[in-house]
Every structure is written in structure tokens, then in C-alpha cells.
Image: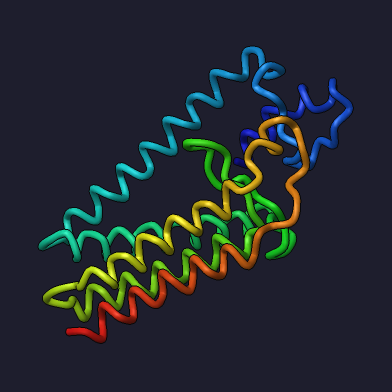
Length: 195
């Protein structure tokens, strides 16, 4: 999102918005010729997910190992991305810095700490899942993993309408996020322990 911020500087300057900040987002109607770049960003996001899924497929023997490998790839990619930005440009300033995480299907926003927690959990879960692949995962474990993912997703898009309409992100729903994280981690632990 660093280059999207840079490309948006002329629009932000014309609108009287701070140049170095990401929020409030520039409305799509104000992007003019830059809208094409946002569309390219959407394609890049989809392509990144497809590439991570394909890499995980190389390591997979079945769906469970594919999911574990995908979790490991996705989490490692996300952590490396944030670490690289910190080293190269000094961003984020802190783990409390708000970020625009994804644009698909609507903007995902949150303090950097939240996706860092998710990414760390994905890396740990992926490693454990690959090293100790359970022969069978019961429906309760699957339900906890799915519910956890859905709830975490909901916490990231909680304020999307406000953000899309040019608002500053409001308080992050940490309790909702924590409930999703707890459900997902519980599902992973249950899946590993039941084998």
C-alpha cells in the first residue's frame, strides 16, 4: 500500500489531506486516472493469494497439508512484508499504526498488531500442522477454525463503510478479533490433540 499512498499524494494535496497519512482514504470518485492503479492493486492481491495457494499445493499431500502449508506461506509472507517495510522505510512507526490490509472484497483495516498476531498464529499453526498432520480432523475442530477465520475477517472489515466514505478508522474491535483468534487457535489445538 506504500506505492498507493505515494500515487495518491497529488490527490491528497489537492484535497488538503495530509500527504504522509493513509487515512482518510481517497474516494474512488476522486481517483480519476489513478483508479486504474487501484484496479491493478486488486489484481495483484488476487494474484498473490493464487501464488501462495500454488506454492502450498506443491507441499500438499491432501487438503489438510495444503491448508497448513498455505497458512505457513501466508503468515510468513505477511510478517516478512511488514519487517521489510520497517527496515526499508521505517514504517510502521509502531504496532498501533493503522494499515489498509486488503481491498478484496471491501477494505480491511486494522492496527498492524492485529495482522501480525494472525500471521504469527498462521505460521505456528502451519508448522505444527505440517509436522504433526492429524489423520483425521473432527467437525468441531473444522467449525472452530472456520468460525475463527470468519470472526477475524469481520473484525478487519468492521468499519469498511466508514473507511470507504473517507472516514478515519474508528476503534478496532479487539474483543471481536480476540474471540476469532481464540476460536481459531482452539480449533488448531483440538485438531492436533485428537490424533
